[in-house]
Image 1 (cartoon, rainbow, N blue to C red):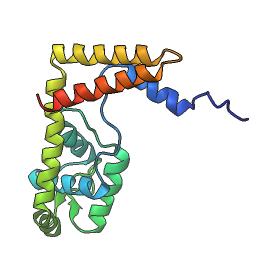
Image 2 (image 1 turned 60 degrees about the horizontal axis):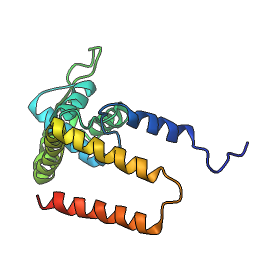
Image 3 (image 1 turned 135 degrees about the vertical axis):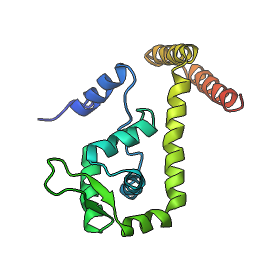
Length: 179
């Protein structure tokens, strides 16, 4: 069955429906698999942990703004185990907890700058969450979104009106950048 060109897929509808609710965790690809593995090694250097605890550690670092999916964590745990960078603490336990091996410690030491950069990147998300949750900031962002959506929902917007709108957005971005 052919879709009408103006219809939207169920994925588009789901994405839009999700964006109408309150704050949501970022699920877009923020980190490469190799970066996730380095973060996992970083957390395992602190304590033995299982997959869920690693997910929560990353989530906590970003104040809930980013949460890696189990679909990225568990296959990478398996890969790290195959690479002998980590090992299972107790093979008889119901949930596998892992700890770093000497090889994992060497990988971590070799990539210390990258790990520091990743931690900074995720910590910056936490700062963003804190600043974005200031009520006056939330209200201002909401007001801008509402005004922009109302204006862009109108048919037959003239070229002059579009250029005025675009200039206003550029001017606002410039002022915010230099504030």
